[in-house]
Length: 437
Image (tube, rainbow, N blue to C red; front, side, top):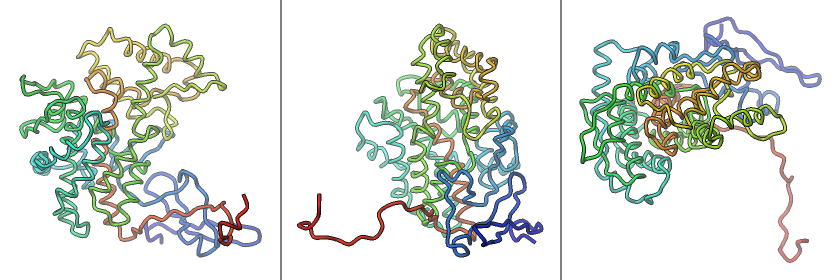
């Protein structure tokens, strides 16, 4: 029987020349089986070579499942479509952290615990003043999240389950406050304190857009859109930033440092900056009448231009999050009446072409979540520099759930990828006077 799954053990064989080795195969509850090569080096003296780890399972997880071919995304077994349509973000947070949807009593208790941790230490305000006034909000977020371990050192002992729980709640609660502070700092406006009577998304929007001189009333359509965006980005299996959090955590680093590492990784344009890149592309196109030229360029294999926000590395079918984001996008645009914005006109026409053009359909270049989220966030009033900050805010709960799962895994080891070395072989040091040019 398989120790991991209780199923009958299957064996995979690897042959090199006239030598053969056997390794166990472990099935998942759904998805592909894996060949356990943890003893490959000790058995064969060889490593595998897998740049980008695209064929390597780095861990065992019960949190998120993706089937890119079928366009499926499940959080703890629940389809993302159902969670985004019927639930709210804090309910999703509870699900990711604890494994099941909460009862009414559990939901009330969890919401209250998060709500009453939203304020940050007052000294954090002075910490922000150390950044240049024109600092990128993501740079500010990376620094301030890492600094949380200096302000809340009573929850950095990862061997203590209670401290792990307190740190988890603190980060879910405080990162929206830090994100809003990063935004306010970037535009020179005073920080706005959180308000306990508001829900998670409404509270965040108020901290971003309220000013002391005027009353601010949260638009429920905007709040619901923000909440959905958070749900859709909450987790996405073992992507680059999540793997970074797990790798940092495997060394025993405190949870605040691990989440700061995740934020830093997410900042990369190939990961968290995709929706900003999509919006920049729309700006480059400029007007609807220029779209045919750019579509023609996108179809030309010899042209370096690529349509950003179409297709996905994982999803070979339609991105399931994009369907919900599309609906949310149109709800926001309808509510705000953005019918005369040239950029949004370009986006809508590109969407129409992508959904009907045979080339896009054949290549499965459907609009992805980044295409719609960029348009939506712009319409809501966020500058492109804040897009990745919002992504990090939403993904924090996924990072925490993954970190928590890793810490509690008895088989967890410090991460140590191997390499294929192609540098110089051993050579001896020569005095500088004898070295040849």
